[in-house]
Length: 119
Image (cartoon, rainbow, N blue to C red; front, side, top):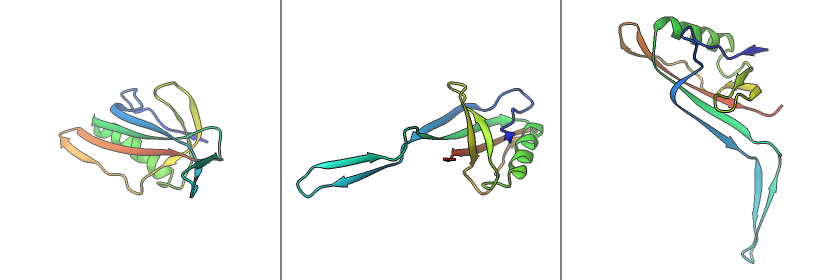
């Protein structure tokens, strides 16, 4: 399985980046005012938004090649969380297109969304 690449400058993301955890659950609202909640999984699924605000066009090429290799949302890969270095093996891109903003000569910006899914 492929792993999310580090760009040539040696980083996985620039700041700011965000991560969030989501739990699958069901909530039943009772007519008496009570609430019953059920958890469907013991571990959360994570998602990340990686921001590359100022990277070279060479680094963008590395990210774009990997995005194309994964065929956007289709391919799965492993991703190492930047906060706790935990490895998430069932991840995919959570976007359909690879957008690039050109800030200036050899200075570009890219935002990538990654989502973990259950195996």
